[in-house]
Length: 598
Image 1 (tube, rainbow, N blue to C red):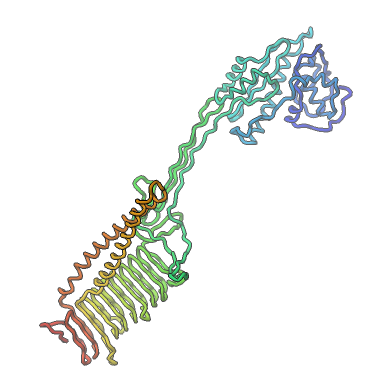
Image 2: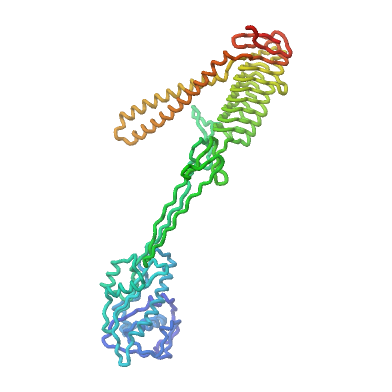
């Protein structure tokens, strides 16, 4: 020791010191006692267990090996053959703190490193205890002590390792019963590696940390989540016309929703799996969280509380984290190439104008705050136009209810109830109710107007005797709807025949071909949908046919005008009359089989 009082060339961490230590414990040929004086210098920071204190330490003891090898490591000096003989590293090899199979352990890298340090501290304490037991007595005799197993359990109790100290003197090797006793003392009973335990008893691997038990971590349940059946926003798309040109008017601008459509649905969380630690304690699994469904306007929850369903028809909007079904589709500006055509289940409100060539279809009411150019507007409800219609002989307006505009010029109008405005010029008006032109100028000039009950205006015709034709006592809107329904019904029936032929072909040739079998099923579904459409149209047609026969029973129909000019032609059912001179405050109706003015 006196020859090795140099400054250390390398300072090692506690972990590195143990790893570098050689814990020789074989029996030497001749026992050697080493007296370590109290003032013997020791390099570096040394725990109390290694502080020399005039102890008689046998050279084959664990403490001597630790102390001796530590100082050699601090000195950085190579060991000669004599020192190697004293260190006895040939039989047992170095202390292996490296924990094998850590990649499969339910511990993080930081936790594994922490367990290395804990195991190191525990082994130092045990080494000190073993030295006190195994040091030589006054006669120089070394007591016989059997091999001892030490079990190290991780803080989280998800892993356990075994470390075996060799026997001293005439002590025996580790037995299976002693290993089981060590496990029992630490209550390690679950996740045991029986193969590793068997090798410990069979191979007696002294001074090595061996993984003997591994816990099963709890697997938390997966949280529930919401599946949205419609995109939150849609990207505008354009269609192609028959010539392959892009039709910029036909944009997919809105998401149409029907009553009962499932907007989104919650997927249930999974329950998770319980875990167990090496001490046998069950680790209850954490249940996944329920997905939260939020209700927007005009939506409801399904009976099982797992779906958000549309409670009315409209267009879909995603706002503030929720789906809303809006009964009114708002266009903040003009209906033009920025918006495209609109086909909407509900009301449509246009803040600006409707430009030429564009189409609006709605199952509700269409309101336009600006004007309508040569466009097409179809509504099951009313069509309200704040300014007017400049149709340029291209505009077509159809409404199941009222059509109202400040002025109506050079267009075609069909109304199921009535038409109202300040002026009608050069237009074809077809109305199953009344045509009232009393506000503002209140003039009807040119065109052809047909009404079931009454045509009422301030002035009809002009001093220039422009041809103006009026017909009352008919149901033009009903007849138009009947024609359209009959045409649509014929088209759908033709499609059903094609579908039936396709189904017959697929059934005949499908055999076991899954693709053809699936196609046949798809076509059968299409046939079912078409059959429902046919039934719906037939019912509508029956209703219209009942109303179509009512025009002969229409009585009391009349034309009312503050002023009516020559050249105005009037038809009342099967009677006709042409105004020959200007008349004021007239009512034109049928009396005793003739048209009279009074």
